Image (cartoon, rainbow, N blue to C red; front, top):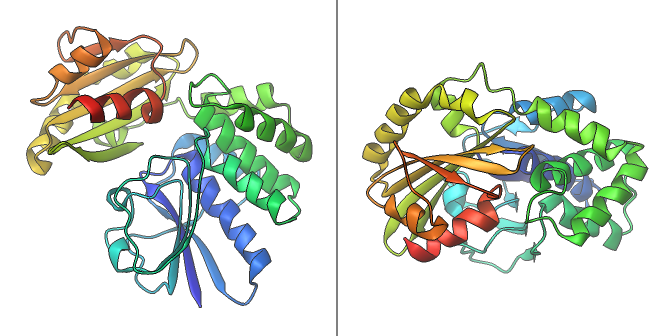
Length: 307
């Protein structure tokens, strides 16, 4: 029996680490199955840094779940964010920390979701609930995911559970959270080698709400202006996507991880929604979003409710 474990498209650190960590957990339950951690896209530089640091192989790159007897979803539940043929697969488990979207299954399944800042926080709980020993490597992977999703505990999505899990995992991994965390986050902010198209797709998600279609892409940096130097090229790519997909809104959010602010390139016929919900002005297609760092908590709900 073959099981694929997949995170969402355009995978971020939590998506990749969750696939690896969940695969390791599943092997403790059933060592006769072929359990394969997978990914639906290329690794970002932060994730590459982590995998190199812990000397662990990346999940298998796939574009289809064909051939799997069952699929486990981590760090997402929406079919829009999953493999193109996910509706044909048998989904046996979901472990996630996002809003429940358009998932539908033909059979009952294991579903664990909590309003915490990171899927790996939930996976840490699953290890403890099932009395599975966590070694230094997998502790480090889970810790890295929590640091990434919480921006070293600065994100409003971060909860006391995330902080506690990170502290306990750091002890197991024998890692100084602040020293390692800052280096890890900085590794993910080097965007100099990316084309405009690659920047848009580092971490991009598509949504439907109230009859409107929109996409929100996000990158982290320590220098927003350096990213905006490619603004004209980025706008060309966004406008092409808007036309190709019939999008009503596209937000490319550039987040300063040191000062915890963002600027967003905003395009589409529903751009005024951004001005309304953030009480801001879009100047030359750019909106300043003070204090906004979390797509999941500070952007998606507001846009979804008002578009």
